[in-house]
Image (cartoon, rainbow, N blue to C red):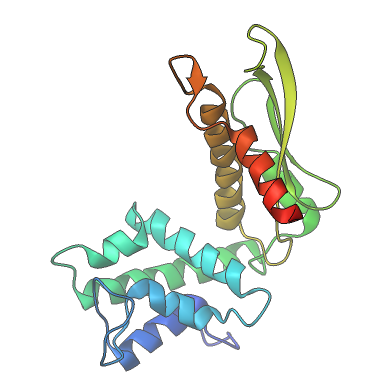
Length: 214
């Protein structure tokens, strides 16, 4: 943390908590109160605030990019030391502060900046990613009709999106989740056995609708 900061960032807070409570692997917390890396992030993010989830998601994504894998797996890797955990958080904190200082950026996107960031992402031909008027992430995709082979249809897939305190890492995570969720749906639209769908996604929707109406 620099001298000009009024409050430590999430990486500084997580490191302070780990030094206070002690670090463990393989569990969120043990009987002595020792906690893992990700549990420390989760604790200091303060989910009682509306911005806590985005702060946590951003920190988790940054650490994942830094170590090249899921931070949970990295934490639990055999032979990992607390000194390495300390170094990871110190580097993440330093990178975060340098990024803010270099760009004079408060760390979070405005609505127009979110739209501009989303517009930079592309996927398959005919697939467009944007944001709806209500703020949700919107995928508009031109795909083959699984009910009428050879014909094409345009489908819309929406995903809730919190506009507060968004960062580049959180936006990227949300866009990837949007695409992967719909790709799972497309898989179930086509995956068959002896000509019959194994897990018809539309049947699931009907069942859920019936259950919610009872």
